[in-house]
Amino acid sequence: MIPNPFARFGICLPKAFFFVAVLVLAFAQPVKAQVKFTFGDRIPSFHGGYYIDGIPSIHFIDTGENRFQKAGRTFKQTIGGPAAWGKELAEIGLFPFQEPVIAGAAALGVGAIVANDHKITAFYQDKIEPAFDWFTPDYLFRPGPNAPEIVRGLAIEDQYILLGMGLTYAYGFAFNDERAQAAALLSAKAVTYSFITTQLVLKPIIGRMRPVPGLSSYSGTEADARARDYSTSPYLFGKAPGIQVTGRLGTAFPSYHYTQYFAIARVYSGVYDNSWIPYALAGVAAVSNIRGHNHWVSDMAAGAVVGTVIGQTVLNNYSERKGINMTVTPSISTKSVGAQFSMTF
Image 1 (cartoon, helix red, strand yellow):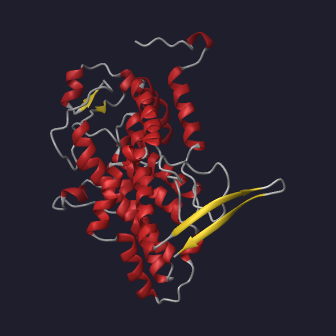
Image 2 (tube, rainbow, N blue to C red; image 1 turned 180 degrees about the vertical axis):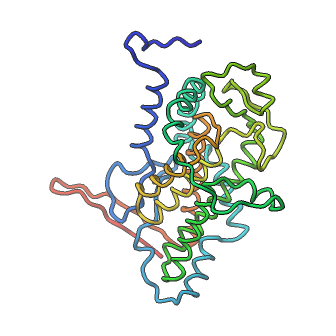
Image 3 (cartoon, rainbow, N blue to C red; image 1 turned 135 degrees about the vertical axis):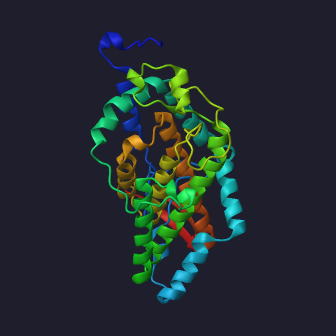
């Protein structure tokens, strides 16, 4: 057992870790896209410029197109084609090499949680999950036994997320709103990339076992836990038998749902120039059906990082296809602080 050097001061280490994590997430959330430049609101990129960025509102001005013309153009610019998909997936995979400082900092943070995952996850199961047991919405529809496996594997919150994206697009088409259409279509792409990245690539490679429910009070053996596709150890990796769409064995790291939540939140925050509402809704999705995920806390933290990378990559490439090119030069004097913009469409 790892000694707690803070015990003499009455500090519970798992609670302290969780409290610090909440503060970090609150203050280090991805920033909103802005028309105005302000200091301290972006994450510097290793290659110069900024990694976390968004789409200024000026890019969604009225173009005079009818709803069918705008819908067709927006679909083409958001979805792209095979070349764009390959480029985006490659950028997601190469992110640690393209942005080593950001990736390294994220890896250190997740690694610190992994090192203490047994205590942190036990605290999460004992204190956080019970607080949200009441918040489990019902299914919008229950897939029949003959439905495709991927449909039967949809979680409750997945159905609501898909409904929200669908309603966003329906609103965008009905009211000829390019911003709403772009948000929905880019989010659909982000969800697809989240599935590919986690379910088809990372989980089969990493193969981490999920934590046994009731970790702090579990009295069975590790063999008993393994028989149910769980583990009492946060250090059990390499146990995935291959790609599993709905299976549990070795599918803990990273959390697909947290990847999906943060990918969608990043897209909406960038398109709508708002961080608080998308991330608040991501938090609502995260605590709904909270016991249905069975993850180590580090799985969720890693999913948040991967999801943010996916969402930002989708935004970046959409900006390129849309022909957005903007440079911002800070202007500082003894009397004021401002910025000069250079923008091409």
